[in-house]
Length: 318
Ligand code: GTP
Ligand code: MG
Image 1: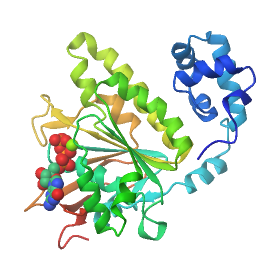
Image 2 (image 1 turned 180 degrees about the vertical axis):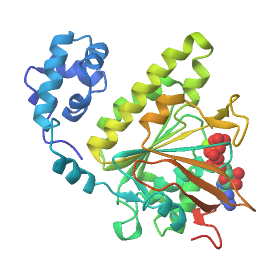
Image 3 (image 1 turned 90 degrees about the vertical axis):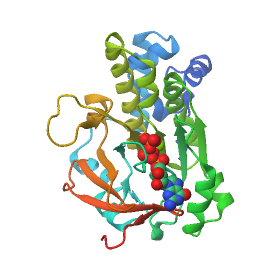
């Protein structure tokens, strides 16, 4: 999905500025258009006033500006869905995992978050009539739990050639939150080079939680996490791709009745993610997904199973 304009087409951006911008991860006009002047100026050392002009002109060039509701409607019509491999889960999600949105998978360890991410990295590659977008995935792994062997198995189940399925997933293992943030900045470039329609961040919060310890660090952590998820949302909206992030639960000491856990990341993550799906263990080996937060979907539950070929319907579910 490479844009029709290059950085140097933006008025006021010469080769030297273009170089600075590229080095800071702003590789395309689209990336400039959705960046704030503050971000541009911070990342490149360009003065704020100049950064403001650059981002405004980039916006004019790619026509990200005030629009009427019919234009919003037209864009929303372009949103597409990626199948999970389970009809019940797809239906809970309103047809599958949606583009132009962030879907957050929350749950305790072993509830299937990572398995679902593996599955979607394969199903996004399927042709439209099989529930995919015939596109590639970018998998950002913060926990070292990505397993190519699983991709091979899931690809086989869906009738895809294993070797091709592996080649269509761009993988990045990240070790600290700075690197995670940088990779998302870089994602504009990667998405410009390849037809990427799914970005997985597994997990969104773990590195941030591990690095910013204690009360003093909390505000800074939330601020950085906020900027990170909003960058992901901009990517999703501007490039019409799906972002799927995972999140752990933490103990909620204020809760006396019901579930004693709540998603990590606080309001920042809750507000930025479009869909919040809570996963838990069900009867036998099933998993239950519960739609906690969705702008226009009914709340509800769906049972599914994790098997060798990824995500399946639970027997009797529908
Ligand atoms: P954390 O990252 O620890 O928070 O957990 P998670 O929610 O990411 O869990 P994950 O997706 O890794 O789920 C692990 C579970 O998936 C295992 O306990 C197994 O039940 C199931 N699973 C993983 N691989 C396979 C497989 O090849 N076959 C089958 N049948 N189940 C599998
Ligand atoms: Mg996991």
